[in-house]
Length: 349
Ligand code: RIB
Ligand code: CA
Image (cartoon, rainbow, N blue to C red; front, side):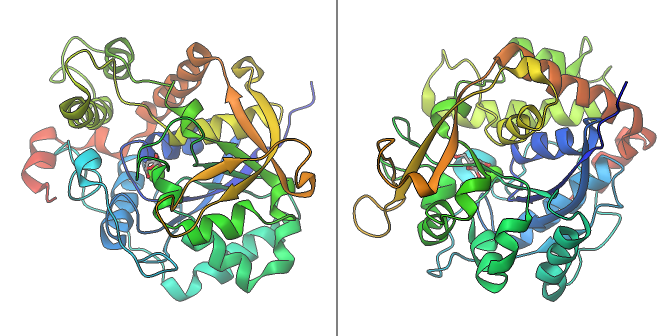
């Protein structure tokens, strides 16, 4: 049997209760090799998203994955945040989140490090953009020649009939619409883009049944520290969104890992995910009342910059892939070797 090499992946994120599900998948799916993480403003300020990435990678026992702080604000100088969904820190909900066991890299080495990885993997490196795309836009402004040297740029973002910001936009696009326009309307990057829009990611919900499978125990007290952490974070996410959605809310959409699942299936792995795509060019509206809106063009308009848009996947198989990664993470998690009371006593927001 030919064993396919792992997919090297770099994640640009704003952890975020759904970002950490994506990080777990990238860190513990057997077909992925997580070579780097960069952080950006978004669900919380850059200080928090960077601290959250370091804390969570510590919890996962993946302190070998370097974390590079990126942009603290959008190209237009805005800082938005989503405390109503993710909490003030961007990753509230559990006192089992440890202090980081390692430091972030220097911001000044972020772009050179990503450039080194792209050149090292000779066209095979995949980038996952699961946050506002400020870092991505600035990186390819600096190194335009590297646009054609990545394999895929898998993005969680955009909304065509579903929105969660501004009435007409999705958060990652809205939070830096200028950056999103530079990336999504670029005819070289377009050849490499897989886009998981809100219309599709919002159908993937962490229902009570899924949340119980995350816990995999009769109670939080009896679960491992890792599973208790993941359960408490997703439960917090559920309660925050339920406050606004009402009592019969099925469960929070875990948007970001859908972009990683789409990449896996596109690269020939986890084929049971059965991802369905259409190819269309997208216009991003910047400024004005429709700031951040993403307009899908007809298939005859700007075919040179059409991107692959994920329109469906097998949700049951998606959760199987996610929960398989949790099994592997649970075997290796650093926090499973730490006394729970100690984690709780040492917890700082
Ligand atoms: O709209 C969903 C996106 O916004 C996700 O990336 C979530 O983490 C938030 O950043
Ligand atoms: Ca995110």
